[in-house]
Length: 598
Ligand code: GDP
Image (cartoon, rainbow, N blue to C red; front, side):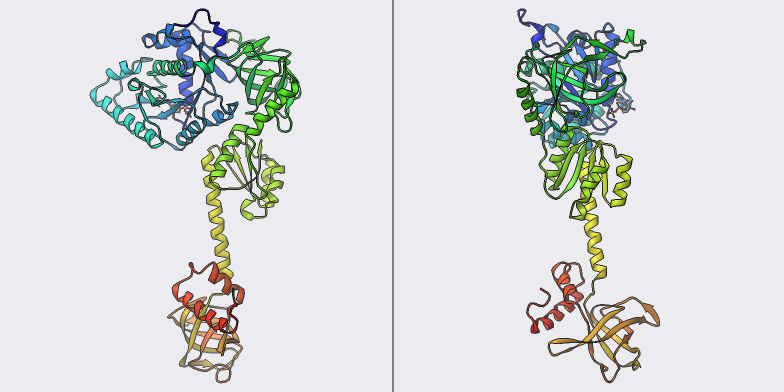
């Protein structure tokens, strides 16, 4: 039983975020929660905030019916963040952690874990956020017989054995995948300790089945395990996180904020995290969406004198141009402005990304996502030269051109736009742009690019390098004495190419005799001849009988630098016979100079 003497204002509403892979039903589930609450309860019981929807306890208990005994609860309800996805989730940080108190991980029962599911799990794990799994789209099981908005056990038991066993199979697969990700889980009605086990709730965002269970479990989790965190000084100075910085007609730049602590009032001095130093400004207006009934009026927003946590609201104030999504907002109250500025700075420093002298440029739309991206880059050991919140602008391209290493002349953008000028400039400056709204994809794309580039570079080196080979002039195969000499040869080892200088080994040195101009194999011009091939070659320079003889062995005249690259970098890439030719050649040269080609 709630303590009657306790002021209900001292317990704030837990904040709930919805995460999951694209198309698994996050938006539909949120819509269903909003919709069912409006239909079942009196309209207005549910309140629309900026960026969030509040579902009060009485609506939860009405939707949940017999699943909930409202006397067990004293938390005011649940505040759902309207923008689903791990992107907004990581944006929404509060002091040192995730802003959301609980998360719902939506997984399509047919699809199971997908890349964004795994990314969401990683973020939940990193932030230590408790979560439940909504195993969505149970209505798609062939033969499913829906009972709209029913608790899941009731509707589950009303299915045929065949349907039930199909669903069971999918649910067990999901439980297996969760276990693979390091989480022990079970169907929620079997979970005793929600701190040790993740509850899996079969739902349908389409039919509303299981939604009562989902609300009940969320409410129960919050009540049971988070009550102490929900105890805030609701009349104290407000603290929140910027969800978005938006231009609003008649107000200029405004902040969409999720307030998670205290109260904010019109006229309050606030400190807002920004690109350079924190902004100190005064609240001109506090805005919330108008109630449905009034929506026909011109004005979309209602100006209110104050708002209490937890809530989503729009703050209009001067000088907000440099404010950043994901940054903290604090009401100064009766504290020192400088102290609050320091507090905000300290919080921003927490997410400051370590940068190196040399590396890539990264951009993200919010502080939280920048931090998540930076962490992923660090894990992948990709150095970052600059990391900022904002769209990809020409300035970023200029920054990327300062990278020494070609593979760092890149910009990785997470959830940002590429400004047209920036795209053009990047083209001109040969800077590569990558953008994605999945972090791991971004990292993977970049890694693939680096691998390809390294391969290309190696290929380019390979193509321009003189390759070792030796060949013997065959007896009775002199077709022309000179200008050029044309002789039949057999390649002993390596690959003989056109336009290669060749020579004879004299003592410990190679005496250049001329250049192989052309190679013919059975009368056809060819570019190269491999070990074992018998071909005729034309050699510019020597005269047969004077400079070269039948039976002579000629070597490709390998420049020292090329020999070095071949031995040190490419020796695994070249065929064995070529390696043999290289080795023999190096032996000859190193008799004279032991450091030749080193
Ligand atoms: P999000 O990308 O995760 O927000 O996914 P959406 O909510 O946009 O849903 C993706 C698609 O799946 C839409 O076509 C929805 O109508 C459909 N969908 C979502 N939930 C359900 C469900 O429970 N049952 C069925 N049959 N379809 C669903």
